[in-house]
Length: 498
Image (cartoon, rainbow, N blue to C red; front, side, top):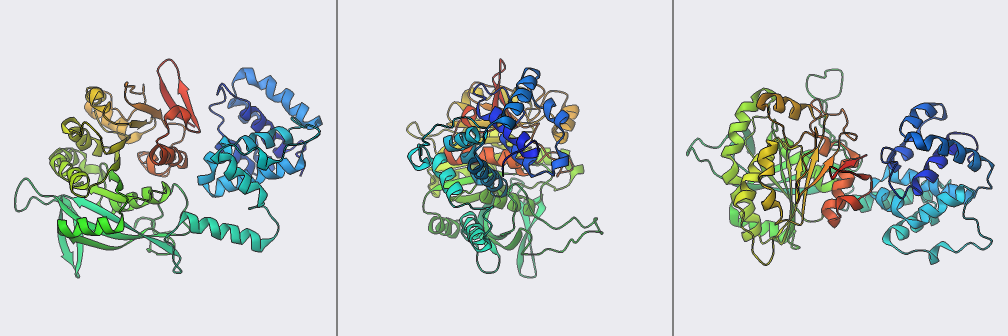
């Protein structure tokens, strides 16, 4: 299809501006926004609203470029490639990073715009110079999503699903295992172990660390960046019945002796790489397991998924109680981290802490003494940390021990804003202004936050853009300034994610 004066023509003009934006002046106009706009009905594209996303000095350039592209001799094959790439990136976000970084994608944008049309075109297979080029080449040469032949299209989609869900079986969902540590009280109900929203200090006030594992299923229909669960009980107009084909479902929760726990973890994950999730305020035990499972799936993490579930009350009204409990939990978190590093023998550990869970983590960090030769903790992700900003700043010398330390903050985080009003002093998870430290990369995610969580406090687990950013941070250790969708803000030296 030749992009005439239409929605496609507007999309192509935006892409042409974007691929030549070497100075990243179009930070608010991300590739993802352009791709999303391409999906909209033609009458839903508002040029005036679009221009507001562009710097004023680019408005005239956009209009002039639009007029020139309209008159140019465009390459229809190149436009078809671009449509395939946009559709695939939207349906399977794993490809978004590679597509937007591919030199072949930029070449197609130039050709579709009527530029770069030499008499003899160099074959694409001779232009492949990176992994991103290789991915893009495979996409366009199989005519994957938009190919009119249904069998071929369905074959490709099945292949993608199999790659994305390597443990999926004929029942329509994949199984995964979460190895946990907790200091919650337990009870046996109908032969099943349940962990409650109170401390396990009934026999000794210090409590104890309990370990175990849980098997969880994830539906193949899972949408990247979402946590599919039934509607809450009070939404009587919606279906609130748990369905294994549509929801994350916990199948077993098993308390284990430490020796059995270590043996099972070693046998199942011999590669010695792990990801530890520490949940925040107002989370139940099940909440923690579900979020850990979602992180493992959406970050495509192949190592062992670990969860430390401290005894949060799981209720919004119990903020002060949770504050007391997270301090009490620091010793148990220290024991759990010692267990997975010193006894399980993990050589690469990535830690993601959310909200109030960061308070226990920073106490552990202050006392952590890694080997002089090698520190197995490779990544620290502080997501919406409910910590005094000044207290976190005092930890700056400790952060130098870790290859990457990343703070995700937001001006729209309602829970952090409430915490600020309670404690009076600024919170690290609030981006007003962002907390910037020498050995920590601060990413302001205000622009990506969704309204899917009532307090706006779970953007790390609700935003596709944040998950994509964390994917390349944890899987590849890519620094912020090199990740797609990231813009550096000078002179404060923090980053924004669009």
